[in-house]
Length: 106
Length: 106
DNA sequence: CCTCATACATAGGTTTTCTATGTATAGAAT
DNA sequence: ATTCTATACATAGAAAACCTATGTATGAGG
Image 1 (cartoon, each protein chain N blue to C red):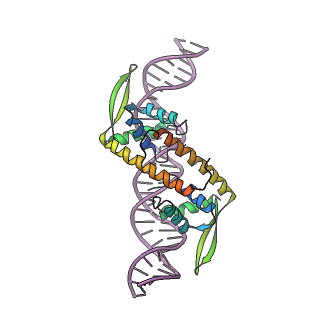
Image 2: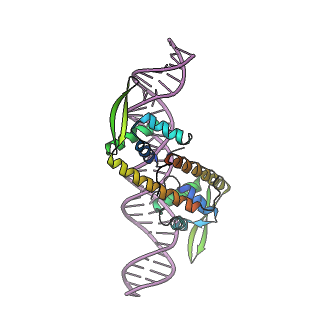
């Protein structure tokens, strides 16, 4: 299933739990959603680069198992954006559910 | 707030309550979401035309207050698509909420 | 040695939605 | 009468978000 505008929110949220690298962020999102939100590398990496360019996340290199990995950590601005997007998700999903009230959601 | 991929679902759902015309569909969505999902005509009408082209909805003209309005009704295919999209919304929003579990959603 | 999972990246295109604008009518207000 | 507002439909053009496809490279397990 596609991310429908929530990819930034999900990435920021995963990073709020601690620094992480791209591949692992994607795996976390996929696993914690039971495979429903699956990672697309062509979506993931450009989004990470974009968030970095906007100063929402910050990259640093870290060696792991003899390989250099590109880790990201949330910045202050990123944390503020996360709060905003959490709020937006809450309002958006409530709004949709308000309209669908009465529909049988399985 | 933008529709984030749920506009088709919402239109089909409103039409499942009975035939309606574009302007009224948009108003219903706006009102039932307390103004959070507001209608954009440049989004609404092309989407209606698209759904009509795909045979999901069917247009008919109807006079009202001396004016001719373009009403739409759900087709069988449209109803099937609605079921599918309801299911998708349910799975998608659950998946996002699963990941955000632990975040304080206001 | 081969394959798979890991890991990052970019090019190019599609879908969805937005902004902006145009046209026209009915009803209410001044 | 005229002006304003809400109703009603429409299209052009652009932007944002996301996808598909592909390329490169390494480490681990068989």
